[in-house]
Image 1: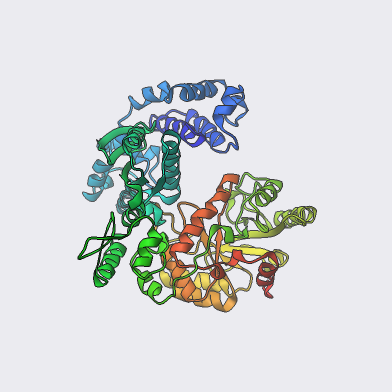
Image 2: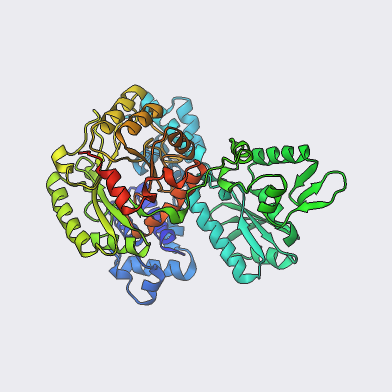
Length: 574
């Protein structure tokens, strides 16, 4: 089990203890869980070296429990706790804004023991009979349930990629494979994934199927056949695999990548040329002769088309663009020269400034920006103007020390207040290299008011990038109401870029809005919003989303070299 899985065990312990009304202990277990989450090394290594009690929040008792989980894959204490509360109450805690106290009140007063019962009670207005609950409470809970259900069993793109890549690595360790890839919506880079489709090209698939169903994370084998199998993992995620002959791998990968609409359009094009296209290959319709099958590129070329990147295969104009020779040259991961949205331990990150520098150098970046929160976001330890000035001095010292290796930029993620003014006075921002302006409050403003608020911030002349422009959290919070066309128009005039925040549950701007930004000739900055070292790797998710949004290298701000970037960020602002 990895650090996140072990932390989840102790978070669940805390939740159940909260449900039982136990004082003090829940917070102790949550501190331990956070300590485990924040580790920069593998917890199993620390356990083998007898160093578990070095973890913040972990004492002798919790250390013994961690050892048990690592040894057995389960915790007997948690099993005992689970037997003491209805399983459905834990599911209720996944509803946004429903905490343990609320869940227990609902259980005690109305006997509610799962999400379905709560949904029914709220719909029938039964919650109003409980002191402290009213019409708004019911509406809020129903909205929360709707959010939970809309997410359903879908995985975020970042989570699904990790699962698929680990599964493929396992298969490769067990079987010599000619070809192996994930397909479906995951390969197209969609922001959420319902299940995972794997495809292998192998002329002797029996050993592949055996390895597939033997994966240690498999909870249930749904179906096992000679060329196709399905399993459910411990997480509840379904994974399907197909094996095809090596000679047909390209056609099969094209077919199973989809989308369905893209495939229909391709088949229609093939019919017009006298071909038949399926997962086995492209064939002459009359003679049945195989024309192309071994690679995707070969199939597209036979249809008179260039290879269309998987991220564009949504029947959203990509075939027309391909025929005209107007497909975009999509931005690639290696085009990214630096990260312009990073948090440190000066606010709510865990990285010292020196670690940010080291990570930037290790990733081959030309530049990296320190953008801690501003003072209004107190929960994050946002910086006051005085602390910001102190941080800028420290950043300048480090920048000088490492000037031959990387450009370290001083910056801030400054709150856009309710009236559109910024959280720092202009004098506090005038010496910053980069300012990310972000909305972190009053997400339920009306469309006009929110748009005016954001446009005012853009036109202030103080910000370089609008952070996570729609405020969405995938599966948790809807985007706020905002007129992005007006925002893009203002941004173009002011030379302000839109962020594509690469955090897995943000990916904001989304792909459709990236395409609109490109059309409006507004630059997009792909940033991670990293608070921990490993989160700097989220940049890859941002690039995938940028590619789905048809963005080219020239459309992305941080593909510029350091000199060009500084010239853009200067621009007479602030």
